[in-house]
Image 1: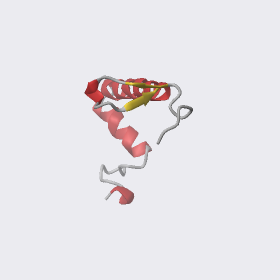
Image 2 (image 1 turned 135 degrees about the horizontal axis):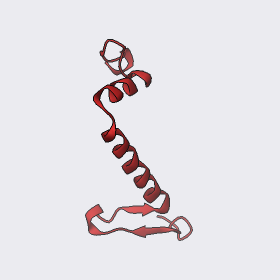
Image 3 (image 1 turned 180 degrees about the horizontal axis):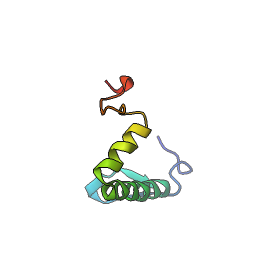
Image 4 (image 1 turned 60 degrees about the vertical axis):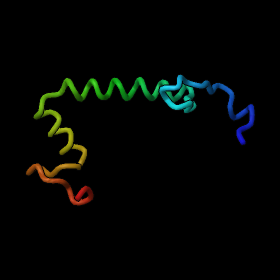
Length: 69
């Protein structure tokens, strides 16, 4: 059971989320994720590839790095 104190600041969302609870922090996170996705969509293919290389997901040859195989 969730106490009233734990439920403070939490509001019910529309049925579109199947009654899932969302905190104010969740709303801020959702906004940040939307901005990040928009930023990635504005990148060129070369910029996206370089971003994956910089993050260590791809090798400089364009193959998946060992931890992601």
